[in-house]
Length: 119
Image 1 (cartoon, rainbow, N blue to C red):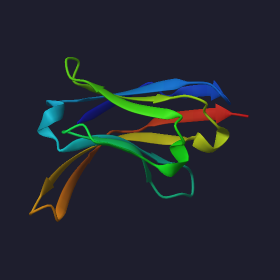
Image 2: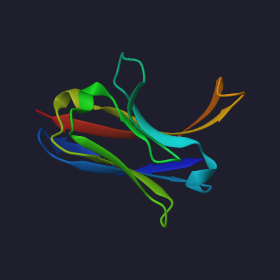
Image 3: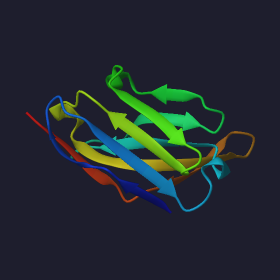
Image 4: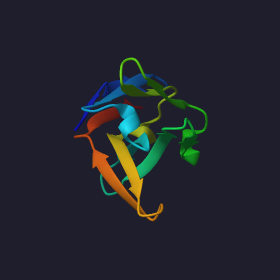
């Protein structure tokens, strides 16, 4: 179970910080991240951090978002700056475990939090 918080409505150019707290230690997962889904679109990766600390961002982030984790608080964050109307979507926390010699991945999802950037 992944508990998300931090979504909301901001004006274009504004900032939001999303938080995700799993019900077990974050290092029990091989990685955690954030995905988003806008109406009519497929769910897409925003940012991801592995248990080893490797970070990956989608191209559309363009340096505006930062994924981080606080081990003491067992929390993963997504700091979003310079938000655009195109960033409007439901944002989902994701945690995953890799198995089967790296060929399989079990995904766990939060309930989603709405982010709206108005023009």
